Image 1 (cartoon, rainbow, N blue to C red):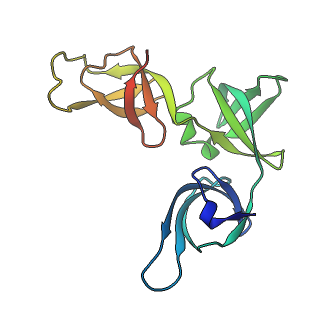
Image 2: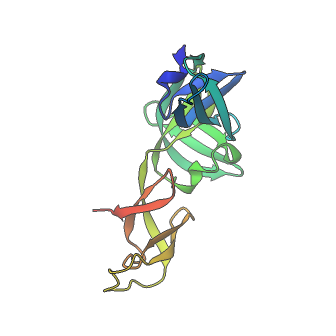
Image 3: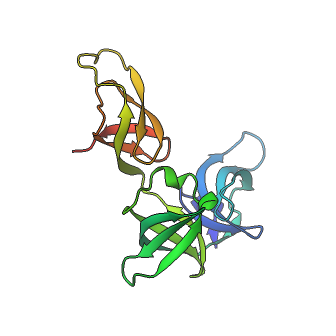
Length: 187
C-alpha cells in the first residue's frame, strides 16, 4: 500500500481495478476542510489520462511493475516487435498501446518494457530525454541568435518538433519526451 501523500511522478498504483501511473500530482490544503491530492493518472492498459482527486492520506494498492530492457526490432503490421537482449525472446505489442512512445523509438533503440505481475505487458517506459536525428528541416540560418525564433523539424521517427534556426538536417539533437521540446544538440 502507498499513501497518496507519498505520490511521486512515475508511481504505479492499482485503483478501481485499473493500473495507473502517476503523471502529475498536487497537494492542496484549503483554508476550510481537509487536505486532498489532485492527481493526473495514465491508465497503463488503455493509455487514457484521467484526473482523480484523493483525500490526503488515502491508501491505495501499489502495482508491481517489472521493467525489462528490450530492443525495438521492427513493425509487423499494426504490432511492434521487441527483443529481450538477455535471452533473445521476442514479444509483440499492439501499436495503439504505445502510440505516444513510438514517436521516440527507432529500430535498434533500447527501451524498458513494463510488465504487470510478470506476464501482462502494459507498455513501454521512455527516458526523460532521447537523441534523434533531424531528417527534414529548412536550411540552417546563421546569426539569428537574438530572438528565440523556431522552425519545424521532422525527426527520423516522423515526430514533428520546433527547433532553433541554427539546427541543420542530419544533426542529432536531444528531445524532452515529456513535452516534445528541443533540449540541445547531441555532442
